Image 1 (cartoon, rainbow, N blue to C red):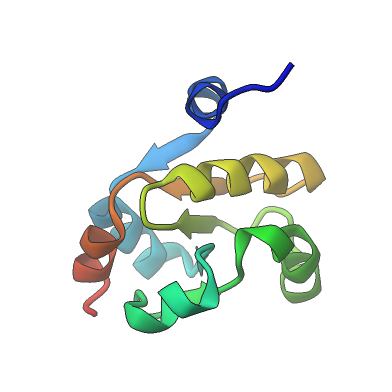
Image 2 (cartoon, one colour; image 1 turned 30 degrees about the vertical axis):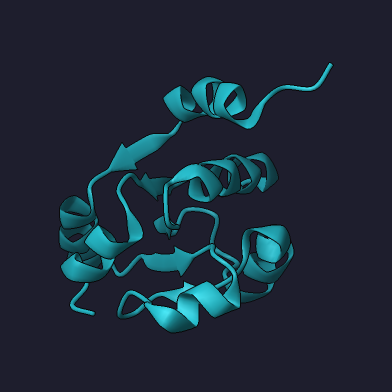
Length: 116
Protein backbone atom coordinates (compact mmCIF):
# COMPACT_ATOMS: atom_id res chain seq x y z
CA UNK A 1 0.00 0.00 0.00
CA UNK A 2 1.35 3.39 -0.99
CA UNK A 3 1.35 6.12 1.65
CA UNK A 4 0.71 9.63 0.27
CA UNK A 5 3.53 12.03 1.17
CA UNK A 6 1.29 14.34 3.26
CA UNK A 7 0.24 11.33 5.34
CA UNK A 8 3.83 10.15 5.70
CA UNK A 9 4.86 13.62 6.87
CA UNK A 10 2.09 13.56 9.48
CA UNK A 11 3.45 10.26 10.78
CA UNK A 12 7.12 11.27 10.79
CA UNK A 13 7.00 14.91 11.93
CA UNK A 14 5.88 14.29 15.53
CA UNK A 15 8.99 12.19 16.16
CA UNK A 16 11.33 15.02 15.21
CA UNK A 17 12.58 18.18 16.81
CA UNK A 18 11.27 21.19 14.87
CA UNK A 19 12.22 24.80 15.51
CA UNK A 20 11.89 28.19 13.86
CA UNK A 21 14.66 29.73 11.80
CA UNK A 22 15.18 32.33 14.51
CA UNK A 23 15.77 29.66 17.14
CA UNK A 24 18.03 27.73 14.76
CA UNK A 25 20.16 30.83 14.19
CA UNK A 26 20.55 31.35 17.94
CA UNK A 27 21.48 27.71 18.54
CA UNK A 28 23.93 27.57 15.63
CA UNK A 29 25.70 30.65 16.96
CA UNK A 30 26.27 28.82 20.26
CA UNK A 31 26.71 25.17 19.39
CA UNK A 32 28.51 25.35 16.02
CA UNK A 33 26.13 22.81 14.55
CA UNK A 34 25.90 21.97 10.89
CA UNK A 35 23.30 23.74 8.73
CA UNK A 36 22.33 21.66 5.71
CA UNK A 37 20.16 22.69 2.80
CA UNK A 38 18.61 19.48 1.45
CA UNK A 39 17.21 21.09 -1.69
CA UNK A 40 18.58 20.41 -5.15
CA UNK A 41 21.75 22.32 -6.15
CA UNK A 42 19.90 24.62 -8.57
CA UNK A 43 17.51 25.69 -5.80
CA UNK A 44 20.38 26.22 -3.38
CA UNK A 45 22.24 28.40 -5.89
CA UNK A 46 19.26 30.73 -6.32
CA UNK A 47 18.92 31.52 -2.63
CA UNK A 48 21.07 29.87 0.00
CA UNK A 49 21.27 30.43 3.73
CA UNK A 50 24.64 31.80 4.84
CA UNK A 51 26.73 29.00 6.25
CA UNK A 52 24.56 26.22 4.83
CA UNK A 53 26.12 23.40 2.93
CA UNK A 54 24.08 21.87 0.16
CA UNK A 55 23.59 18.13 0.31
CA UNK A 56 20.48 17.08 -1.62
CA UNK A 57 18.14 14.74 0.21
CA UNK A 58 18.76 11.92 -2.26
CA UNK A 59 22.42 11.54 -1.25
CA UNK A 60 22.36 12.99 2.25
CA UNK A 61 23.06 9.89 4.33
CA UNK A 62 25.99 8.83 2.17
CA UNK A 63 27.58 12.28 1.84
CA UNK A 64 27.07 13.32 5.44
CA UNK A 65 28.78 10.20 6.74
CA UNK A 66 31.87 11.33 4.79
CA UNK A 67 31.67 14.89 6.19
CA UNK A 68 30.51 14.43 9.78
CA UNK A 69 31.71 11.46 11.82
CA UNK A 70 30.32 12.70 15.16
CA UNK A 71 26.77 11.34 15.56
CA UNK A 72 26.10 13.79 18.42
CA UNK A 73 26.93 17.01 16.53
CA UNK A 74 23.83 19.21 16.13
CA UNK A 75 22.50 19.06 12.57
CA UNK A 76 19.89 21.50 11.27
CA UNK A 77 18.04 20.73 8.05
CA UNK A 78 16.10 23.10 5.84
CA UNK A 79 14.34 23.12 2.49
CA UNK A 80 11.61 25.14 0.80
CA UNK A 81 8.67 23.71 2.75
CA UNK A 82 10.12 21.49 5.50
CA UNK A 83 8.87 18.37 3.70
CA UNK A 84 12.25 17.24 2.34
CA UNK A 85 13.94 18.28 5.57
CA UNK A 86 11.45 16.15 7.53
CA UNK A 87 12.11 13.08 5.41
CA UNK A 88 15.85 13.76 5.50
CA UNK A 89 15.80 13.99 9.31
CA UNK A 90 14.13 10.61 9.51
CA UNK A 91 16.84 9.09 7.31
CA UNK A 92 19.66 10.65 9.36
CA UNK A 93 18.14 9.38 12.58
CA UNK A 94 17.90 5.90 11.08
CA UNK A 95 21.63 5.82 10.35
CA UNK A 96 22.53 7.01 13.85
CA UNK A 97 22.68 10.81 14.00
CA UNK A 98 21.37 11.74 17.43
CA UNK A 99 20.83 15.50 17.34
CA UNK A 100 18.87 16.30 14.15
CA UNK A 101 16.53 19.28 13.92
CA UNK A 102 14.15 20.37 11.17
CA UNK A 103 13.84 24.09 10.58
CA UNK A 104 10.09 24.37 10.23
CA UNK A 105 9.53 27.36 8.02
CA UNK A 106 9.75 28.45 4.42
CA UNK A 107 13.14 28.86 2.75
CA UNK A 108 12.75 32.61 2.34
CA UNK A 109 12.23 32.92 6.10
CA UNK A 110 15.33 30.81 6.74
CA UNK A 111 17.31 32.96 4.35
CA UNK A 112 16.13 36.15 6.03
CA UNK A 113 17.19 34.82 9.41
CA UNK A 114 20.57 33.74 8.11
CA UNK A 115 21.23 37.10 6.39
CA UNK A 116 20.87 36.20 2.73
